[in-house]
Image 1 (tube, rainbow, N blue to C red):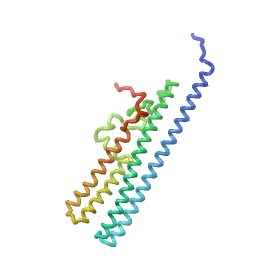
Image 2: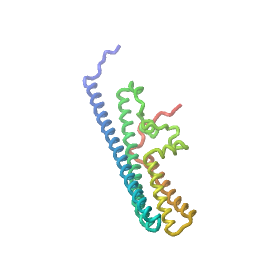
Image 3: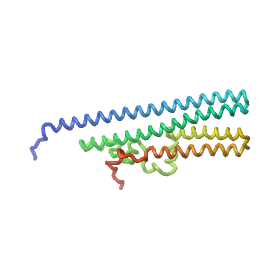
Image 4: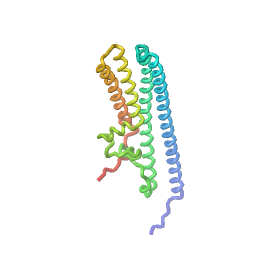
Length: 230
């Protein structure tokens, strides 16, 4: 049996490292909390603007019976709502990108914990790997279906950016329909104009949302890749 003892300062050094890692971990948790708070605040502001515009347009419609005055007021008012919506969804995508960064950072900290105390691995349900699979595990997303298939598409529209994308696209579609009505377009032309305004908004935000987590970033290059499943 070996009678060698660890250096006198070894335990103190390990404790110091754990304290530093834990401090950084709490800092990242606080930052993620601020990210969620800003996201919810942005959504609340947009929905307040949208609700106010709908109520105002309802009052105008009662007075004008959806006539020329209503269209003249509705188009610029909905254009303001559309701008607010575009800004909100774009900011939400940026916040999602930031949140992905914080998740990767916390996974790296867990990897450092396990390097100091490997026996704790069975106690972690979140990942200690900083690749996409590890981030999805920490976020509670099944990586077997993430990124492909109908399940992935449905999940996208359950998120805040995905849900608001449909709302903002609906506002764009309403503007397109009103513009068609203003030039005397028939019903089929009005529906086509609404669809032509709706579809590009959904497509654009879909591309923007995907770039939020797939854009190359040297600081997010995986250092500790998840083991391949058997």
